[in-house]
Length: 432
Image 1 (tube, rainbow, N blue to C red):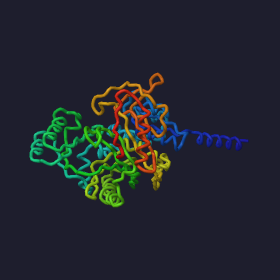
Image 2: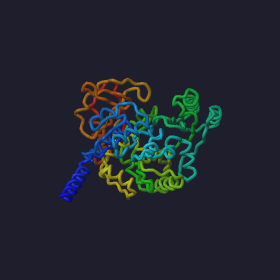
Image 3: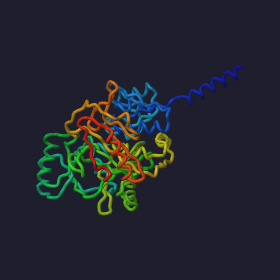
Image 4: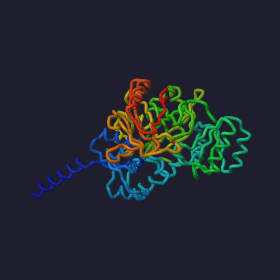
């Protein structure tokens, strides 16, 4: 009788384990985080999702944490609510040391520890790393003194890129093609503090003419496994004009990543990066983004991000055949990772509030969201009184899928026409 009771209790425990829903917390509040959540649920409907801070889209597929939390508070929340895995979407949390805090609390988290996150959060640190390990990158000079930077500019007549040392929400890079523009940009960054402390030190980098590419990868501490290549459209204006943004659209795959360019990337950027990460003890379980410039049949590394790009994520996930959660769990378990992709193309068009990336109005009613066909992602919108309302600069990510980039682009822009709100703006040249 006792033996039978023990077996019944054991069977009950096994059933409870099987019934237990995996809890995942995603940190961030944009389209990227909505895309991650949708992909996880597509692969496993039983997952219970939490988001901080989330948005209107994430509130439908999971639970948004509404109180204001520090990264330490988030750690205690994850502990109290038995969160199985936390995925960091936004770089903001990484540079607040969220990974270190979670790991000290014995929690599983996807992302780099604070020192490794400096590869994104500190451009001078990243450039030094690239130089040390022979990673091909544009020539550069570092300045912490405004006068010395001005003197350098007065002697330089070439086009240049001026970069803040710290993060600036994807907007801390200004391309200047003449001295007047360069001096104006320098004044905005170092004197008027347009980007705050991020501009206390700056990098003046040689300007490379070419085609940009993004390659996001997953890093399991031993190997870097690349995703499909992507092309991000960073400027607010068509033909890549105007101010830098967090991204106004993307296409996958990038048509400029040829087989020879891919081989060059692996040899001169990916492999030495992996060597450097291991040598410098910067290993982690998470994502690594390579921001590239293709010029004269060579590829140069412009920057690292230590998380998935936005809007590249929204363009990549609809093409991913592999189970996203399995990829993450394989990283933690030191297992070999391979990623399967659909043999299709995707095009993401970002709908924004006119005025972004500077001043813009929010609180505008959005028409057409409920009739949108998948895939699409909410970036800066919330639900109030059963209506969709704009709440940020980048509002919606509309994605088209096709056999070619042209077909994917056509489908994306057809879907764009179903959305309306006051001061709606989008680029019409994504994928051209």
